[in-house]
Image (cartoon, rainbow, N blue to C red; front, top):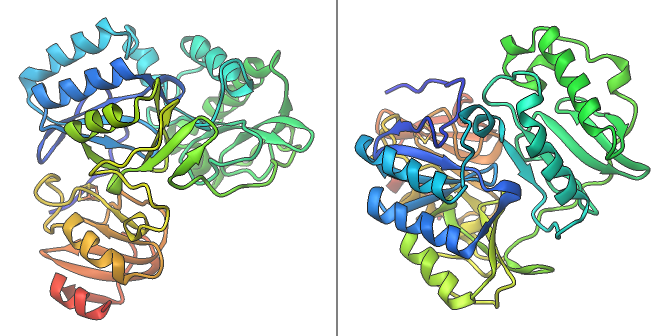
Length: 373
Ligand code: SF4
């Protein structure tokens, strides 16, 4: 079985076919949903999908296991609640991840709102390109995939092309003008062929006018704990059942849900609550594990992944990744240990990605349990 890199991501209008049916992605604006909106998604997951909801690395949600016939009624329900844009072009362009602890009316909220209102006027970009609003007191999103980054710097606000070490100073009044300038350069210089900003910069020099200011220091993302806006809970492997999500909401009684890009939810305005399916202990070993759905949910995989990752987690001292195939969807970056499915067995990669050459191949789950005992 092989995998292919698609030049697009699943969306509400264009779900992606997987081994367990269609995957349909919902992109909460600024990562926030009301409780009613969240419960609607849980209902749709149960009524039209397989009851599972993914939390993605860009802070989106995905309904899984939808049939082709279910697509139209789900789309209607999402449109009725304004959870997706009426214009598929704008919906497609709204690939935006926000620092999740923003508050009403602050810089991140203002910038994100302005950006959403302007998306239809921006230059046409490759479908996978997206934005990071890393504009809280400290940068949190530098490891989250994005092509254009809005960031705080010691002397103000900057706009930085992903792949460049410096950006340009911007203000709220010229942010759209500066963004349009950068995106126009990207398209005019052949960026569509590269498909992503960092890939384009690897072969094409970014003009000096876009490289003036250094971004501010980086802070580690929060782990499950009480945050300034409510308790944060981890979602093992970014996969939760709709029933567990509804149960968590009933237990915590938040006003909103914030979807973070770290496979975690923040229960905005809620009280701390334990619920099966969610991680509240920041030292829980499962938080060290990344694993894609694997077989049989993904047709590209020949191995089961998540049960193995759960079994291995208490034995691992560092982050590790179990990948159904070399595509490495769950963790595209290098990991101290990566186990990649290959023809029904696993390859062991050290300090690399799922696509890197393994130091050992042909390993079974039993071999791995013994290796990491
Ligand atoms: S990495 Fe996992 S989810 Fe991605 S294509 Fe391979 S098997 Fe499927």
